[in-house]
Length: 129
Image 1 (tube, helix red, strand yellow):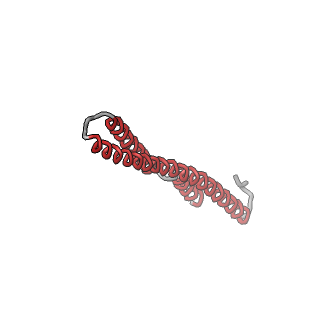
Image 2 (cartoon, one colour):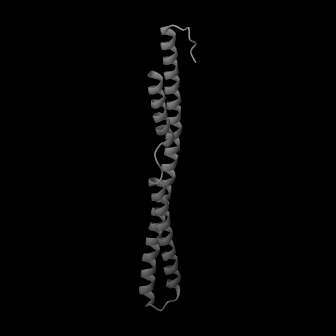
C-alpha cells in the first residue's frame, strides 16, 4: 500500500510496478497451464493412436480369420478362436478411441488463466476509479 504523503510520481511508479508483477504472474500461470494442456492433448492423442494400432491388428486378425474359415470349409475348429480374438481387438480399439476422443474434448482450456485475467481486470478497474 502506498503511504498518504507520496507524490504523484511515486503512485505512478507503484502502479507500474504492480502492473509489471501482474503481467509476470499471468505469464507464469499461462505457461504452466499451456504445459498441462499440451500434456493432456498428448495423452488423448496417444490413446487415439493406441486405438488405431489395435484396430489395425484387429483387421489383420479378421482377414486371417476369414481366410482360415474359407480354407477349413466352415467346420468351426481353429478359426473360431481367431474370430473371438478379432472381436476382442475391435472392441478394445473402439474403447481406446472413445476414451481418447473424450480426453481431447472434455476440459475447459486454461481455466485458471482466464479466471485470474477477469479478476485482475476487475481489480484494475476498481483501483483506477
